[in-house]
Image (cartoon, rainbow, N blue to C red; front, side):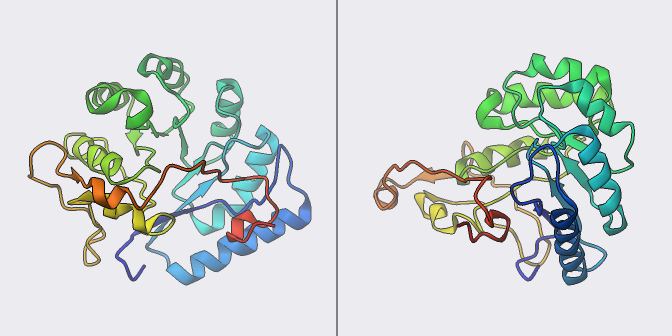
Length: 242
């Protein structure tokens, strides 16, 4: 919060899959309660489920966590089953967010028609760039659906997502990892977007193009490697996997 962030996202569910037993459910609730106590009532708190639960489990967890006023419930069930998602949406009051694993604008049609999501999360790097995502956002607007781009890439993807945000009336918030998980990666470009600690917002660059410039010398310090974030490793939700 000291860095200016006014929203954060957390997955407290460990290695849960389809079901979550009483002990792990109670632990997840205790984590969210502790986070809410730490950040206060005004900061938005998003719940990430990574598409792992059955509809019944997702609904139960959403209801147990409702007192902490989550801003959304992200991918509560596997994303390929819209009927399962609709089942959850019909039974909870928390807004439903999904869409990071949809890779074509046309594939969103059934999601809009089902009214199963309140917020879509297209990834500009997966779905075809700024123009394709802007077309999708316009369709989302006609369905009264907000847009919160998925953004776990580096500064170039962040810069592109900000250009989209600036011309999208139904834009909600931009995901951003680089201050935390990959802070050093910002050195790969000059002009990397930064969150203003006073406002919690990015300033929109007026430089040519996306406003960032690749620095090959800095990039040489980051050789290509196979990165893997194991959601099934015990303790990963505490960032201390075994």
